[in-house]
Image (tube, rainbow, N blue to C red; front, side, top):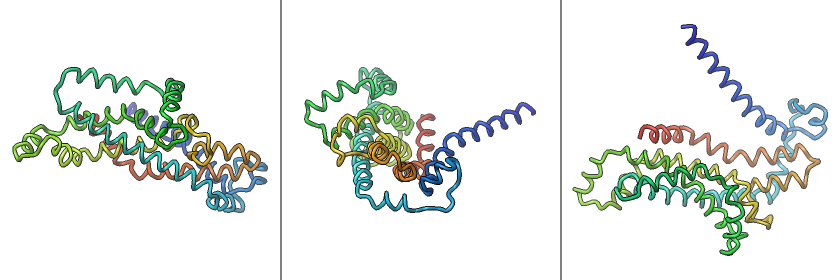
Length: 274
């Protein structure tokens, strides 16, 4: 009994530590945007007093911020759509079809989880340059979708495999083709897993820094992570304004992730059960 209470207490302690490590820096950034540079220099860890909204108003009134935001949203939407579309088709084939080399192909995608973007930086840059895709949103979105495919397939395949075969047999008896079953039945039933992989792909693309840095030289094409770096270099002495810009750049992805949290857990749970 005591060991159970001790384990529960340690679990709560670990949760508090994790929340503190993740939330406290975020609060520091957000609250820092409501302070002046003088307040930050006087008391770096203090609360706003008085509260100042000029920093956030200045960032929101800047056309550069909205340009970076639009670029990030466009690239993330394209990368997410490609990853979900291609991943769902691959997951369907790997889960419902029997063919030679199926497990080897699935293993190859699984190994892709261990393949970081940094390893492929030089060949990827040369390939994009040869294809004339530098300074192009597609030059960022397509590779991001490719690197999201392994986790997408790893989640979708067991989820789709867990859908009873009797449903497919009944659909075939009713005259539905394999493509019709995939489009009309399998995809709607796989909505939790599809939402999970979509959120993961979107957030990964939104936070990407290295790939846009390789592809873009024109600041008009920069995404938010590149915009934050550029803003920090231009206004290095204006700490409060930099904190406001950083906080605003993190809000869209954070809000998107929080709103879809339950669906993410549901999709991962179904994948594990499958």
